Image 1 (cartoon, rainbow, N blue to C red):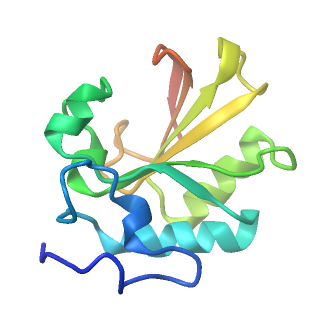
Image 2 (image 1 turned 30 degrees about the vertical axis):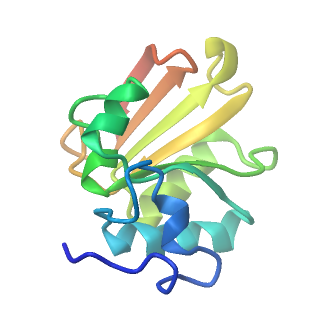
Length: 148
């Protein structure tokens, strides 16, 4: 991938700096399709805050990320938005339709369907061989994984 100027490439609602949280400067690896698909999601759900985008391997390790994380490949981000009007199944349908391959729901207290804290979305290879949905508690413990 080419090095890019993060301030000058953007969609209607995002600049690439929002996806660059590596803490290692302005050179990042980022698949621009991810940015464009997140923009499409924003047009459906409203304002989105990208809490984690591209990570260097060093930064990924510092946040206890998976060693094979799609964040380190520029294919993933974690987001927050107003989850109130959306149930889990509606979000799954929307995210699959938009072209995400892996979705991780992070639930406060580990109660699936209650208190969604953040959402991991990525366009990497599907973990289950097809569209993959994972539910996690906020400590990083997987509750369940299913292929759709």
